[in-house]
Length: 168
Image (cartoon, rainbow, N blue to C red; front, side):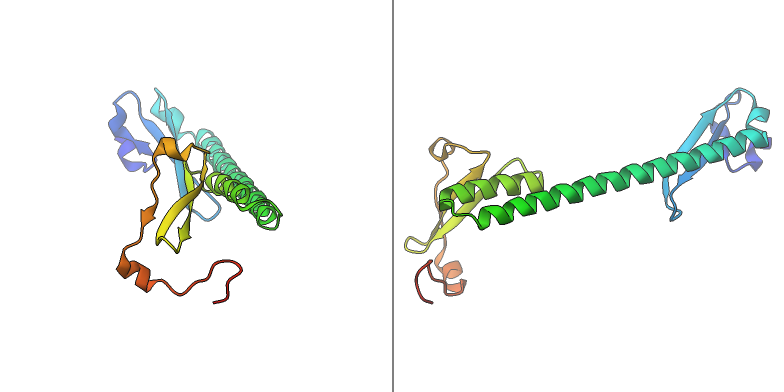
């Protein structure tokens, strides 16, 4: 019938309920969705005023989606910048190392949206990585976080390093 000739009419919905489907596209002509309308009367869907109004509505929806997406990106960028500023403040502070590491673990966890962040530091004398900070803060013994030993091959591949205050 008539519906078969109109690319916007999807006749498979049912004989008495054609669906008008209009693409929702952004400024770059990327498809972001579809505006679909069910109506009893096929002729009502064919009315140019109805199709024009629906096309304008689809364009408004696309603009709304774009604007909302842009606002979310701006919020995310602002949050990231605030977190990075906080990281810089922590690094430049005179706090004890343990407090700095705990603060940094919390900031990294927040920035990454992670459930857990650990900071492990190398104990060169024992050739192990030891947990120094976690976010959220846990009793390390309750978690049973044992130091991680480094196998001799991996240890040999590490570049030379020195502890703070030592010369390389």
